[in-house]
Length: 229
Ligand SMILES: CC(C)(COP(=O)(O)OP(=O)(O)OC[C@H]1O[C@@H](n2cnc3c(N)ncnc32)[C@H](O)[C@@H]1OP(=O)(O)O)[C@@H](O)C(=O)NCCC(=O)NCCS
Image 1: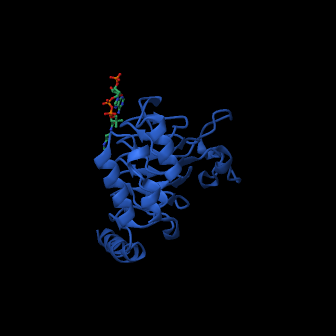
Image 2: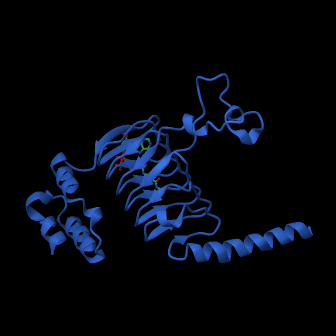
Image 3: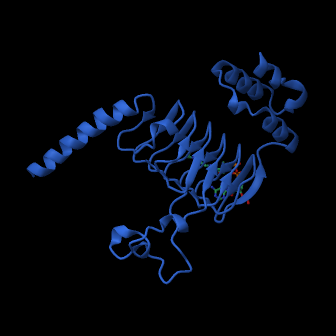
């Protein structure tokens, strides 16, 4: 009883002092584990009970909702991404062509193997580019790149790359439509608006697009001039 109380106090101090201080510039809920602070862009929002592998890079304006696991096979999550709750990205793989699939044979912590071979069975990585929205309970398997502007439907199991501005749903995830006409997508790709640092310019771009939709952006919205201003 006393031991448990002491453990609770230590945990409380760790979470409310150490973590809160270390991650003071990031909006995260206590009980999430964040990666190295230098790998996180600002602002970033991280929900409750989120695990983020230490080497994952998360860029600014990205949110990761409650109960997500961003595993060791994830390289990076770009800017302006929204990761829905209970989503799992880039978790560990086990070998399929060895005597056993069990980690007991390649991870020394089990006491059988002296050699750590975890890395050799986990060479495929996940990259999430910018402005990607991943719906609730999606599963993104290692080796997948989800390109700029893509949307992944709730509950999707993504096993292969998803194209720019595609909407993909189901298990295995299939691309069912594009968010915009190809011409509009090409213009957005060219602009790379997510690289604009100035929040006012970003807002102007968003408002202009919002108002003039569905008119094609080509002639009506002079985005490059807003970016250059
Ligand atoms: C992917 C999504 C954005 C698509 O929305 P949409 O473009 O309005 O798509 P529609 O509802 O018109 O559906 C298009 C087709 O995909 C199917 N579909 C849509 N979402 C699906 C999903 N999550 N899983 C499987 N199929 C789905 C529809 O049944 C429809 O199929 P049909 O053409 O054969 O009838 C939306 O369905 C979704 O999953 N949103 C995630 C919501 C969420 O998780 N929010 C919380 C986290 S932030």
